[in-house]
Length: 227
Ligand SMILES: *Cc1c(COP(=O)(O)O)cnc(C)c1O
Image 1: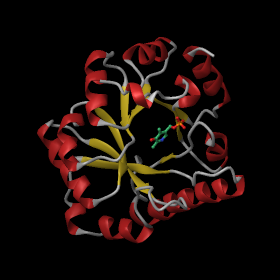
Image 2: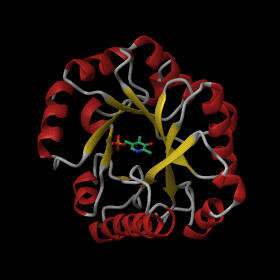
Image 3: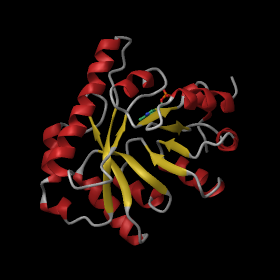
Image 4: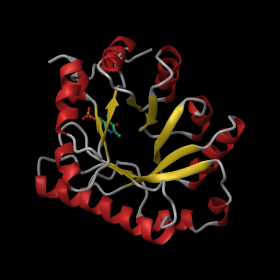
């Protein structure tokens, strides 16, 4: 299937309140251009050194979401280009994003990434860690970041009930933090969850952003990493 028809198929299956993040990591510029020509404007990348040259070469009306693990020393590279950092999992990272956003005279939207999956390796916050961040004085004084919602991943399994429970847990966390910390914010409204194999379940459980990569661009060729 072509990139264009994959995008059309997925988009036609999404409810109006759900946006498609086309996860273009490890794919070449030409593939992204094809998606752009098919009307896609929201892309997800997981590495700074890959996102920056793509943002510089492709049209300015693309919104770039950063979805991978972000080291603090890489924030400065993506700060001018990124529309949303979905993978925020520490206060230290938020402080650095705030600093680089200030340098670029802008506010950078962020999502709080939660760990709900069974695997130990997946990064993200626990509810308690998130409460510690949000109630700290340091956080309250950050003026150049904005928290737009939450992000997470389900366990890597074929067990649909497990996946559904993980997504339901992410939505519960969203509702909890909305109520206790962001009740007055018109921006705290996003739940980013669901990938190629599980995004229909994520939508049923409340996703507003789904992050689909291989379902659009085909299997990633990790050995041909984009340079
Ligand atoms: C790679 C990636 C995706 C997309 O995965 P696919 O299975 O290719 O759809 C979504 N979210 C994150 C955080 C990723 O790293």
